[in-house]
Length: 171
Image (spheres, rainbow, N blue to C red):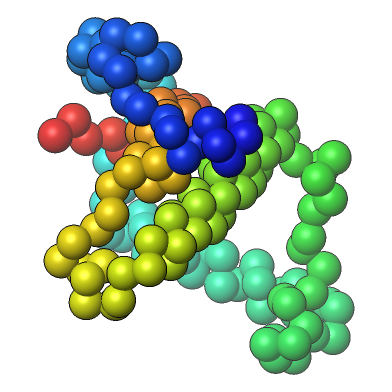
C-alpha cells in the first residue's frame, strides 16, 4: 500500500481482514486443538537429569573430537570447525524452519522500522512517547501488521513438536 493509504488506514471490525471476533477466537481454539493432536501423535519422553547429563557429555566429547581432528583450537574466530552442514544437507523440516524464522525475523525488522518512523515522525519528545504514544496512521497499521504476525507464529509450535525438541505444555 502507498503511504497515503497507510496514513489514513483504519481498523474496521468485520471489514478489515482478520478483524472479526471469530478470527482470534477460532485461531486460539485451532491452536489448542492442534497442540493436543500433535502432543498425542508425537509424545516426548521426559528427560531425567542423568540422561540430560549423559547427552551433554556426549556432545562435549563429539565437539572435542571434531576440534582435534580438524586442528581447531576452539577459538571464537574459528566457529568450531568441520561439523557444518550446507542448506541442502538439512532435512525438509529444518529448511522449512529456517525459512519460517528468516521470514519472521525480516517481518519483525520491517515492523520495527515502521514503528520507529511513526514515533519519530510524530514529533513527540521522548518522554511524550512513553506517556502519549501517537496511535494513528502508520502506528495503527504497524499494530495491525504485528497482529497478523501472531497467526504465522502458530507454526512455531508445529515445528517444535515435529522436531521433538521440548515437551509441550498447555497453559
